[in-house]
Image (cartoon, rainbow over all chains, first blue to last red; front, side, top):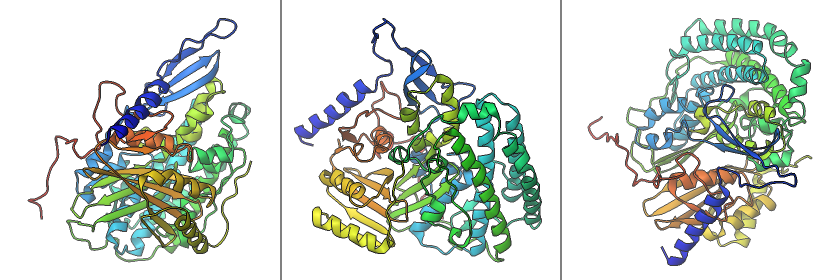
Length: 396
Length: 163
């Protein structure tokens, strides 16, 4: 490395990083002799989604600066993955975004299959999509409950977790686990559905559709307090949302029509019918409406999966010790929070050379720095509900 | 305000993308395959290529930046999506143990945290980045970059005995 390069490097780190990345605000007073107040929100805060510390600079009750500090749950999953064989990384991906475990597994498995170029039995593809859509229901419905809990309403989360509990019971019967499934494998899925499960899912969906309007729409949508706390809060334009790299409901609630399932199709999504839900307002209330409508679309997808599911094998024959050829594999799925991408680099051995996760929680949280300044302190929690981040996701 | 997403046939659009790239920049390698444009470029022109992708070709979304430690050099992959099925995948290699590359935060503001993460995990410095801090690791008294291959973990196992 030349001297010039060294200087450039030092300059770029010291000048831009250490000074602008201040953890405390400078002592600046306005014309009345008043200064802003620094406040730490978290890392342990009863309303916070997991372990996140927000450094806030307050002018009265208005937030002037919001600086998220991450890393309290960092396990360096990418480093651990480099030291394990390909199939042994799948249980780790369950621990990433623990409200979208199936999607994480699916994304990683797609990336490895991209390297291997294997044939997946059609029944396995249908089971994967069925499980992913059930997972989306089990993530979107509680996220409404979390949003309401942050606004001070305790009742909705009980209804939401009742639904999640029932979906988890289905997962337990299929995979043997309630959260950390390790169900989607390279080449297929672990096991076929138990014979009575399709009927159980049909029964559950029938009940959910009856309860949906009364428990999640009528209870929340017209509520005056809910509207006054969420309408116009966290508003952002489409340009801003795209600049910040948002995906998923936070992007779609501004009106940008983008869904990985439709625009970058994977698995059997091209064969299924569903609508991409958008809303124009781009605030917290819009994100709530998008999630409600997406949950209904998930029900539609689950029904199609159950109707169309073919008979047959669920696992391709791959052998035990996988050695993909050198190269890059990419997997990209639409998780409940947005685009979940995996980039796997292989060097021809039986362990990945590099695994990179693009987690939607991590990317969507850039919104905090941009959108929160100018809002009141109590608006922070509804805006967190707009993103609905998961600690295991942003901290990898 | 509404954003207009690119229109038109995907294949033809991608072909014209590639022509545009070829005419304006000294690329090392380029190919179109199944809606994916692969570009291998020298590190100096990465901001120029990304500017072109965003301004001229309407590729609006930077999905992620992957850094791979090739022990002696660093390989960076910029994955860009046009939100309508097209992917532009820009690869570059930085030589040396202490890598520096120009930031792309002025082109894709979302690169802010991706570059911070790359700096945290690999020590890749992004020149001109507005806020180059660590994302995950401790701010002070920690001089390591954990995803470097030289950073050994204690439970490293080999699988030589397994069949």
